[in-house]
Image (cartoon, rainbow, N blue to C red; front, side):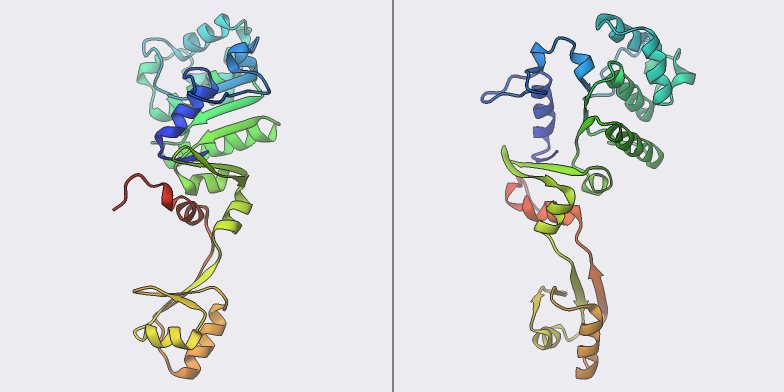
Length: 263
C-alpha cells in the first residue's frame, strides 16, 4: 500500500486491527471484523512500531508474554526467534537492541500464531542495506508459503523489488489496485532522453518528441534511429539514453494531483 499523504497508511492499518474506528465503512479480515476473530494472532500478525515494547524485558520474555496471553504454546517462542535470527540474543534486554534487531523481534511477534495474514508498516525504514535485504527476502519467503503479506511503504524503489500487487491511495481515494507490472505499464512508458546544444533543431527533426527546457523525450523511436537521423543532419548530441519505466516514475505521475505540499 502506497498512500499520499503518508499518515494515511498507519491509520488504515490501525483500523484493520481494530485499534482505530473508521468514520465510515468497515474493515474485514477474511470476511470478519478483527474484533470478532476467535484467535486473532492465529489469523493476523502485525508489526506497526518496532520500538513499542518494554525495554527492560528480554526478547524471550516479551514473546512469551504474548504467547501465553493468546494460548500459544511456549515452544513457539524459540521457533520464531530462530526464524528471524535472534536465537543467540533471546535472553538479552530489548532496550539494547538496534533498530534492525527490533524490527526482527517485531516480525517474530507477528509470526507467533503462524497467521495467514501479515501486516507490516514501513518494515525497512531506517535499516542498513543488510537489514533491508534480509527483510525483503524474508517477506518474499513468507508470501511463498501462501500467506498474504500486506506492506505499507513510501519507498517505491523497495516496493518495486518486493511487491507483486499494489494499492495506491491519494487523499483518501483509491487511485490504483493492480499488479505492479500492470501499474508500471499503464502509468509510464520507456522513452529516449536526448540532450543537444541544438535541441530545438533536433526536436524539429525528430517530430515525435516532447521538448523540455534541457532535454527532449522521444517515445516512438529507438536510440539507434535517433542517432542515425541526427548524424545525417549533422546535429551534435550530448546524451542519448534509453530510460526504462519505473515504479517510482509511475507512482509520481499518477499521484501528482494528490500532493499536499510541493516545492
